[in-house]
Length: 83
Image (cartoon, rainbow, N blue to C red; front, top):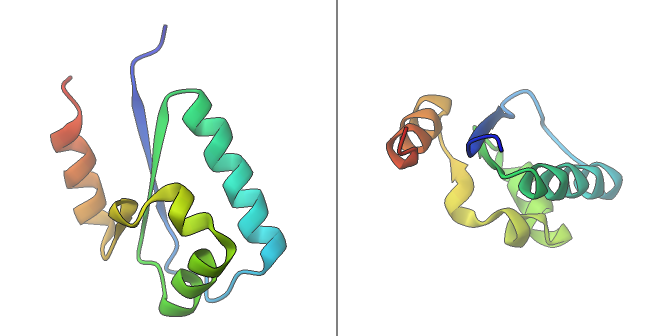
């Protein structure tokens, strides 16, 4: 069995997402979660954050998995990793 892993997704380059993209991201999140991979996002723009909230994606991922900066996300997942 593989150890628990984390993926930090920096989305600064994403200025907007539609419902199809939100659905696909949700499916990716489910697949990774099923493989014991924690997904966190960083540098989420306001418009993208709002769409994530409207689509239910934010509820699935959790507000605590959204970070202002990639460095903050990496530091936090490293603190949580017992290895």
